[in-house]
Structure formats: structure tokens, C-alpha cells
Length: 164
Image: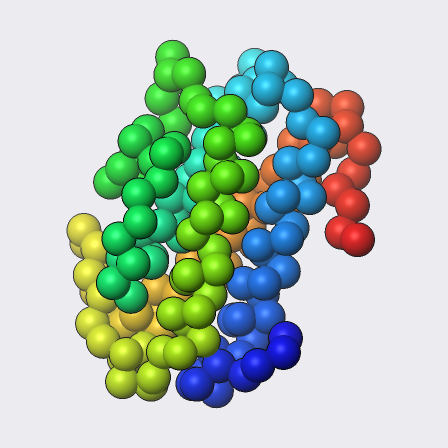
């Protein structure tokens, strides 16, 4: 990481943010559209839903910093909506495009966030926390979701995720 964030509390999180920005693209590499919505006779969330949910998460978090950019793929994920069995989810290319669109602005906003900004109250239905807590949770969740996609790669017969 070239520059350090304004708040030293965000240093480790920003390292992970940058890794996740690259890792999601790598986790999706080579996945065919017809495989992205397979659930292999389970109720598990498929690759498309997992991807869309974390893309939506970055857009949602960005709003806390005054970034009101709209995603092309967020409609099925509004209000933290779970997977919809009969829905047709957007193509992985569209998710990637949205991910790469929101990530630089959110990165910049987080790098420039003061401690006062990070301590602002953050509310979601049924949850009260600080913005810092939400950033921490979102970062944890992104890692979890990218790991799920990496597992789906293997379950669907793809080679393991390439981290390089």
C-alpha cells in the first residue's frame, strides 16, 4: 500500500480492501455464466448471488461517504435481500464492472476518513454500530464471500483460485 490512511485504525483494513478488490476478479476468472447460478441441488447461495451481494455491499458502504453512485446490478440485492430461487441474476461481467467502478472512489474515501468520521453512528435495520464497525464487518464479509466463491470453483470442477 503506497499511502497510509488518515486514520491509523484503517491501515490493516485498507490492505485487505485492496486484496479483496483484486481477489474477487481472480475468483471469478474463467467461470462460465451457466455455472455461476448453479446450486448443485443444494440451497446454498450460488456464485452470482454471492458476487452480487458483496458488490452491493460496497455500494451501500460508499453511501456513508456521500458516494451516491448507482450500480447496474444492485436491484436484486436491495435491503440485503437473500437469494431468490427463480431469479435470473446479472452476468459476472456486469458484477465485475460495478465492482471496479465503485472500488476506487470508496478506497479514496476510506483512505481520507478521519477518526471522527469513523466514529459516526451507523444504523441498519436491527443494528446500531459505528461506521468503523461497519467497515470492519464489510471487510470480514468480503473475505468470507470470496472464500465461498473459491470453494464453488472447486465444486464446479474449475481449478483453484489463482492469487497471483
